[in-house]
Image (cartoon, one colour):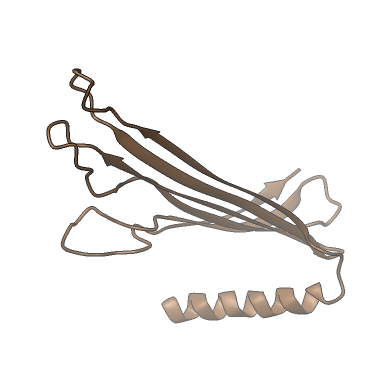
Length: 155
């Protein structure tokens, strides 16, 4: 089953590459950011609060191209990852960073522009995580993996 999927993806990739030699340029849109936050309390503070350090990064990219007069493709990739570290209230030492956000979300959409009232489309979407920390004894990347395929019509 895995070999069939890989072969199909390779075939689609070669087909798209061949069509792209004669088509319009890609329309690419990329947005990314990195956000950090730090709060800390000195020894002069008598409250029971603890400091924390947070960081999160996000990437959102889309690429769209009219491969041929009858085929349009749109690829969307969304990546997010972030961690949080908390300060111990008594010792003022910082904990190891823990994952606070984690997402891999990619989608490939093929729209067949047939000039019909409703154009057919096919898409595949993959959702996963960079790091699965559900079992501390195992290090698993890209787990869990959710794959969704769709066929339909679009207007």
